[in-house]
Amino acid sequence: MLLLDRVGVLIDTYELDVDPHCRENLEGILFEDDDHELLYSDDDTLEGPILSGGAVNLDFNSWFVPFRDPPETASFAVAE
Image 1 (cartoon, rainbow, N blue to C red):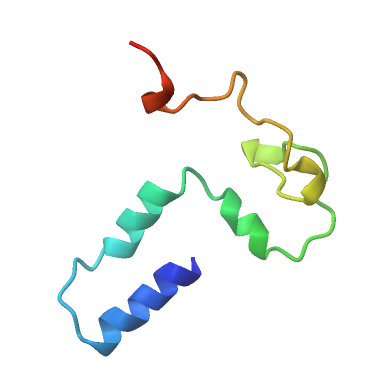
Image 2 (tube, rainbow, N blue to C red):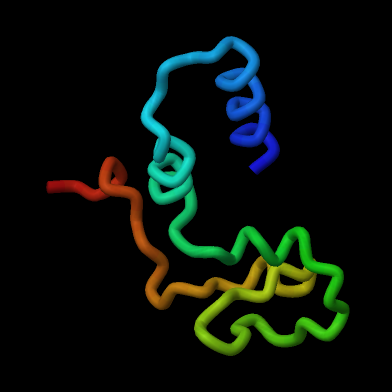
């Protein structure tokens, strides 16, 4: 998010001609869902590996709890 904010500042500073929806497009590619927004949350009541609506809890105790069963394998790691 900070990197995308910085890119926005550079686009404005140098008046670059880019697609007005470039940030939305990049966020769609980079972020599968909005779970990263929890990193900016002040809420101390987050509990359990899975929150309501399927969002994943990002507190430290949940870092090593898989949230896909079975975990998705990268396409380059699968033998044909």
